[in-house]
Amino acid sequence: MSGRVDMGVRIGELELRNPVMTASGTFGSGREYAQFVDLSRLGAVVTKGVSVDSWAGNEGPRIVETPSGMLNSIGLQNPGVEQFCENDLAWLAGQDVPVVVNVVGHSVDEYVAVTERLDAEAAVSALEVNISCPNVDAGGMVFGTSCPAAAEVVRAVRRATRKTLIVKLSPNVTDIAEIARAVEAQGADAISLVNTLLGMAIDTRTRRPVLARGFGGLSGPAIRPVAVRMVWQVARAVDVPVIGMGGITDARDAAEFMLAGATAVAVGTANFMDPTSTVGVVVGLERYCEAHGIERVAHLVGAAWPEKGL
Image (cartoon, rainbow, N blue to C red; front, top):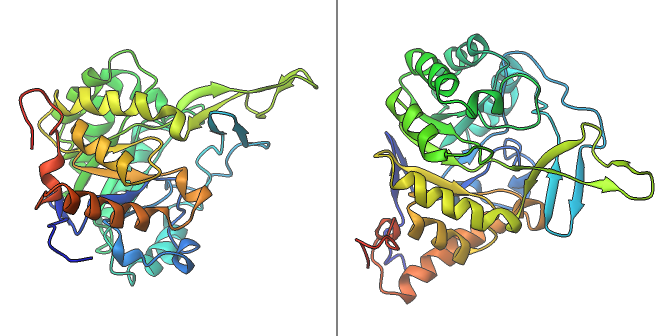
């Protein structure tokens, strides 16, 4: 690329070389993808959710493809924060890319315990508090669908760290802007959205739900219009940066999220179809800016709003 486009963006205290991140839960900790992608070309790697103790996840089947997207019910399987720090984080520290760790818990105390442990790690650039996962019975979306509960988690976590704090929201609410304002008021430096939409698939042969847990989270291009709408609503409702995600497969999709108000974007399900999709979005986004005479990618942010424009 010519390098004529300034691709840098800022999320809280976090400076990103470009606005393209990975979506939590779709990229592991990056180790498996490193054979396909130069991680240093990404804006940041967002890890799979990390809890205070190891979680086994849900019983299978846990994933099913539908004609309109992927349903998953993984249940935040992870090795626990100590194993994560010893193995995955130690490896990520040598990859020349900002590391954002997704934090999960069954209770406020568990969120705080993980945060306090990660706050001591220099390799952690920022934390993403996940109050939006629909695939666990306690924690996750339970906190993200209520303003008081969401505020309680963020308030407690904010006290436990000085690192950049991102809060990931669920689309399974009636007013996402209301939840966003509640977590911003408690010290969130940025807001990421959306997590998956609740969905279900039934096997007509067995007449039973396909996923062992019944419900799962729908992701992929089918949810993109919903996600773009919510990014638009939240970005206009808060003063902190928004990270948009939900069905991004190429640079055009990423530009759409930024025009709606996202400062950065995250690529998720597309990683399963093409493990190089993240870098493809970076390259394509720079070409898009060059083709349209845009000197700074940050100028795309909210450019579709009626009162703005390039």
